Length: 171
Image 1 (cartoon, one colour):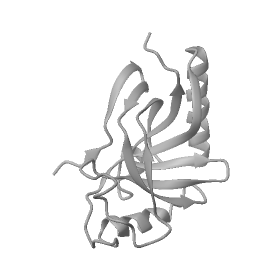
Image 2 (cartoon, helix red, strand yellow; image 1 turned 90 degrees about the vertical axis):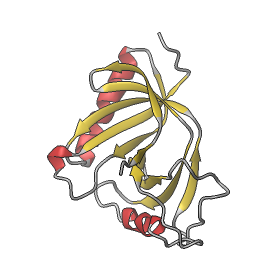
Image 3 (cartoon, one colour; image 1 turned 180 degrees about the horizontal axis):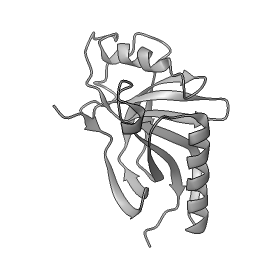
């Protein structure tokens, strides 16, 4: 059975860097302290496992997202597209917040391996440098997207770092 992935269209591609248009989506989110020790994963996993007002199991999707703020981060599971605000079960755990993200255009870089603060810092620098050289204006915070379960060996893990683009027009 295939796992649903957040819907997007590649607008431009340049090696490991892409400009993508994402469709609107909903996530179940928990606030975190850092990206290397995400305790929120288990909390949200319980939610999709049936710890919600309907005791309904919700399919796992990809990616798991970490929204990266100066003071911490979030861990977020993308909710399957079959749900909307009226059909998605309410979380039983008050730490879980349902977030709605409008359609957006992002700058994205793909990388494999283990996620560390140092590696994320490196890829942030690469994305910002790329944006500057292409005269692209970024906005908002960085988001880390992880596509593999924790038991997958680090060398085989697929990760992405994304940041929203402001006023993007295809060349």
